Length: 237
Image 1 (cartoon, rainbow, N blue to C red):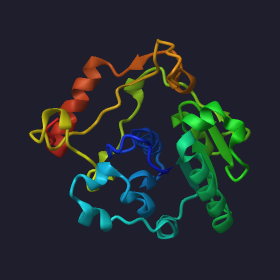
Image 2: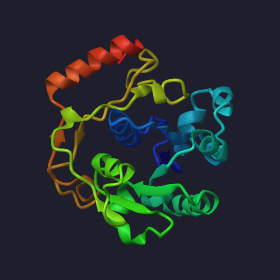
Image 3: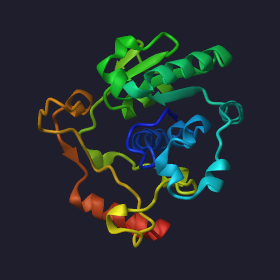
Image 4: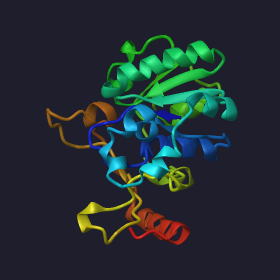
């Protein structure tokens, strides 16, 4: 699973959307790897203030991504790509190269741009997922998907989803601080605990992407998650 070029905040957080999809596939018995071009692509590291400001340039240098090496060592049957409109051109360019160099690997994409404008994705993508991607990705990987543009299934009970596997991310120099409290809280895992929005603000695209049905992890489940993360990873928050 790929996440391509930076957004606009520069806050250097792990990609939870891909994390949810990856964990959902893992739970079904598939082997998953996440390549974060958003944070660690050589072309963008120097411009990514979220990485540079951490004074971890030496660590970042060790993470320079050799994409062909990643693909050749992992040998994926499928590559999924998260695309928003800002990353559309680079994502399409990358997909065309991957389809040329690895024609036997099926390419799928999802995210805000494919959800709102699926018809703009070129045919180098074998599958275009609109909406939430967990069940759609599993159907694609297991051969149940019908057609090229696939409408994702909205997850009604978030308690049933496995959370991202933080082992994918914790050894990488993301921003693990919570600046709200200065430098006192140095080891913080961000949690995405809800989806959707009941409001219809004209300046926001959340309803187009996630829908109006607000859903959240239950308080009881969230408490269990927090306790488990603290015990497993010795985090501060």
